[in-house]
Amino acid sequence: MTFAEPVKSMLKKLCMVIIFSIAFAYIESAVVVYLRTIFHPEGFRFPLTTFGLTSHWRQLLLTEIGREAATIVVIVTAAVLFGRNRREKAAYFLAIFAIWDIFYYVWLKVLINWPASMMDWDILFLIPVAWASPVLYPVLVSVAMFAFGLMILYRSALNQTIRITTLDWIGLSAATAIVTTSFCIGGLHITQTDYQSHFFWPLFACGYAIGIVLFLRCLLRPA
Image 1 (cartoon, rainbow, N blue to C red):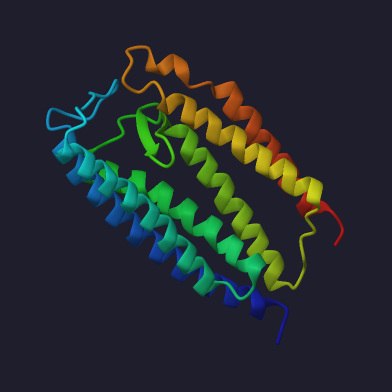
Image 2 (image 1 turned 60 degrees about the horizontal axis):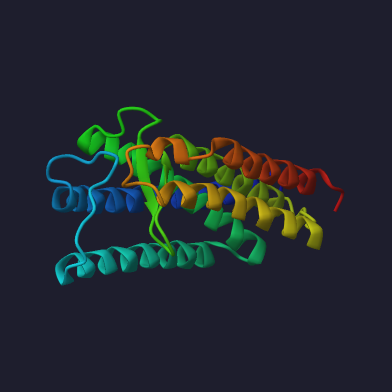
């Protein structure tokens, strides 16, 4: 086996991952088009309208939460099937999630010409509470996730390990928690007229920068 063959094999599998993720993103965006027609017949815009806690709306909300949980299960399952070991499974999860998330917005743009700009607000997730922010920020997260996943897969194809210490894991977990907190704070105020003032981009930037710096340190550390 030549030096290039493992990399070629990885790239072929990655192409399959990209096709899967783009198709899955279309399914996700199509469902959201239907949901916006049901929940926001006059147009999806912030601040969002509050709905009464009737059994009808509660059932739809629980159904949507279940769909989001199922989406994560599908992504995890695909990553497990594509990866040969824990390192590759984690990398494929990052890659699939990133491509799915980015193309979710690409397909929404194609289907309903939304978002009009990267600063349009969106509901990102509902578990355990609503996450919300301008579209730009989850896309930035996904770009980083795809880059991380691709670098891990490339190193794995060359049989080169990435050494991550316990301290690194703590730092990466903290960075993830900071970014998630910035989204959750935004989600708490989506029905208020001043919702835009409740997304603290410096908090997001802090967590984002910590995550990138720590990953690059792990990547450059001698095995």
